[in-house]
Length: 257
Image (cartoon, rainbow, N blue to C red; front, top):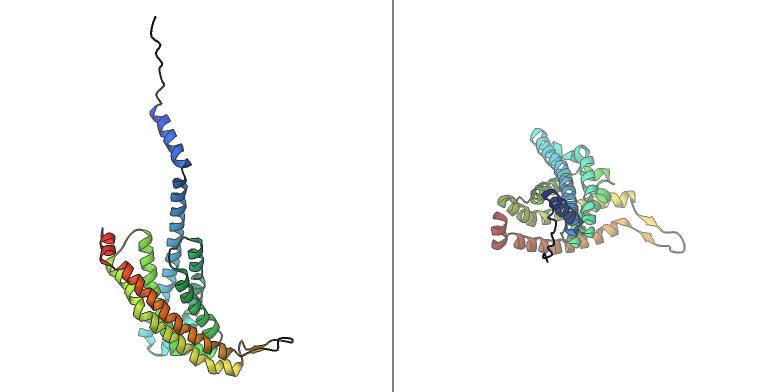
């Protein structure tokens, strides 16, 4: 009797390639990689838009100051205010990025920094035309844009896996002295605006019966000054911690490699 021999069909090279492709596409990690690439591309484009806006403002301010000197400070808000407001409105998306998990930054410090800018820019400066021509507005815009040009440049390169050591050092070191200076500029802008809020009664309201409560907005701003300085110490401590975490010897060696 002849032995029974079973012959198993061997898949061709094209069939193997097709099976492997189907297996890869069916795996969750394949979908995660595609989603991660899409989110990384989106964040890169967001950083690029912010970089273009802030670098345009920063360059415009420098050229105007070199051309007109101190006279350029008086109409800083009128020349770049629109682009500045657009950039700050766009930055609100960063809170959403953290909430949905595509940005690993800490939520509360970033929330404080964004809300500080929005309140000072839209509530204080934008609402009082007399404040818009003050030199403190020019100083404040200069500090904001200097920090943001460096930050968004670093973020764009980091999305591509590029870590340039001097830029990394600048990104995590420059904000430590400049952020408290920007808070002082914000506080000074609020103090300058107080007489105008008192004279014009902007945002001061009186609630109707049965509440019968008057909200005097200059008092609200004075209380906000306290919040501003408390937040400054908290955020400065956070910035120092981030600097120590990113500029440690082990992290620098990893980024170099």
